Length: 217
Ligand code: G3P
Image (cartoon, rainbow, N blue to C red; front, side):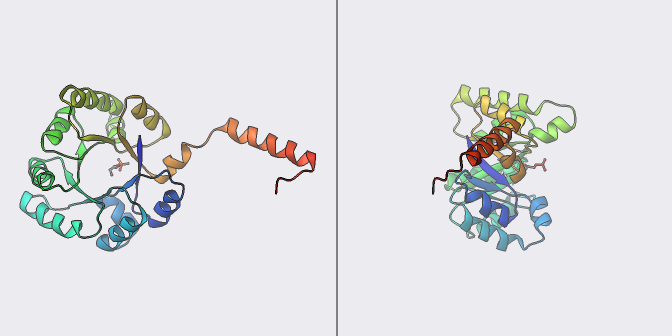
């Protein structure tokens, strides 16, 4: 399973990239606003921090304007993935970009039928939002299971990029279903490493080692 950081915070991205566990980055207009930085500048910087796909989202709502924006975004780095909304205009733009070999990420997916359309449009990634579905009383992880079944039925190559991930249990459930990617806030990636018994065990090992008076170095 690939791990993407869902953030536009370049310090966080650099720190995660240094662990060797980061496979890509996703951003959206809300995350760019939160960064307080210039969109094009921050995306250009992120592209230098990770080798994997960096999703940069269009903000236009018509196919023609999305494609014009994509032309600008594509120049920001060789690993740019154009993120498009799951609308008919977005899907039309996705098809055109996929046909020319540009990476695409279709976002704001909340149903399996929407995911089916994205795969037919040749999307590189589909982004179903599990957390936002959970928030309104639907089962976000069920959507991942449905999409996985449909994509397997037809051998679609579109990768399932689980988005709106809120906690480690989402990651566990998505991994058990065989989702290709999870994009997470950096805090969730870090939380995956935590376990109270690890902390307790390490404290005991450290104390016992100190009691020996020895040193390795
Ligand atoms: O970038 C898309 C997605 O991951 C948004 O997550 O937490 O705003 O629902 P959230």
